[in-house]
Image 1 (spheres, rainbow, N blue to C red):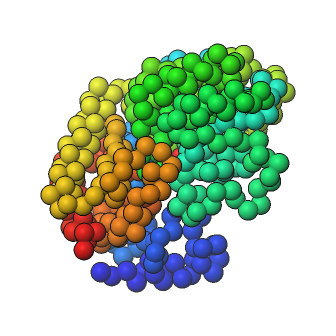
Image 2: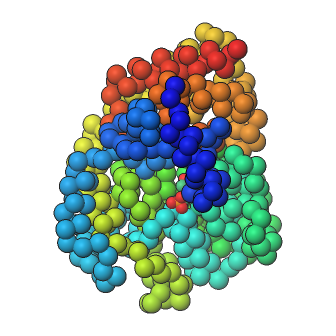
Image 3: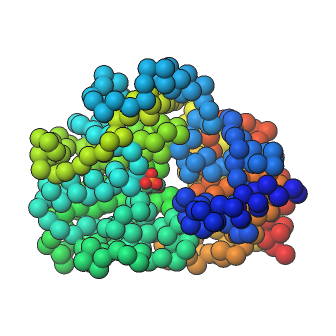
Length: 427
Ligand SMILES: *Cc1c(COP(=O)(O)O)cnc(C)c1O
């Protein structure tokens, strides 16, 4: 394998970029490959090696790399300008499309990243209730800001950081952490604390590997928060548009008070959104006193990508979701059979177009059981897949994402690669 270009770039990168990467999960041993270009289901590294991409920008690329509808609409906008910092008609069009897919929202505000969206959602919940504490679930990841970087998943779990250095105790002590899939823990925490401004949750936990909500977990959560007048925030940064056109809330039939969207909202451009009931959303500045602002919010390039992305999803939804679900189901079944035949202790969690394998005998239902799985074996699996031209996210605590660009042939090749990778895990 010729890896010299990426190795050279990584050595160079470390001199000017901390750890050589601009986001921690991108690093892996001994060094990450550097990407030159992408198309459809593939990325190419600087040595011109092609990988079948199952990272898909951590789920953002539901429709695949450089999807033509989106490229066309962005090209059109590029010829008209990139940033005005005035309102535009296209922002109204996008907001109506989002609200159309997410009926729990009366109003929506656009911003840039998932973390910015959850930060605003939490500030809104505090502004609305005039209360202080928030409840989050162990292993859920809501971005890299202080009040949610407590027992978080994703790169934070991968690097063993429970509370980030530089974060204030005064902030993290107002974040109460409850076990995922443990409704009694939530009930108890709410009964003991009178000062709760909001509950934030990933309706499907996609940042500790993949962890599904157990039956009634979300509906009981909705019931308890309603009874206690606590706003419920669904962080649908991963699940929005991915598990259905209306996200996990459509999938499970549950209406949160506030929703955050980002990754698959624009199929690969910088944009996020916070939406919810109008009595909450109207608190945002300048009409209300909950401040939120950004120079790049609602930028015309990302807005044009998101409009085209949602329109494309809505147009093809009848075949898109059933196809991805069928591909995923068949893939996971084959993978399960292989691992069982090889007598490798394992769990496979999957739903819609996402899955993850864990090397453990214990069902993975929360932070603790996900942490218990054999991470060294997972790392070996990752490296062996990579050598065969299959790129999955480089951490046990992320998720494998299918896209509309994957073909049956890509999946067959990937299954073969997993077969070899499982053998390497067994040895
Ligand atoms: C990725 C992610 C975020 C953070 O989004 P960024 O755009 O990386 O800030 C928030 N919530 C969830 C559920 C995510 O997966």
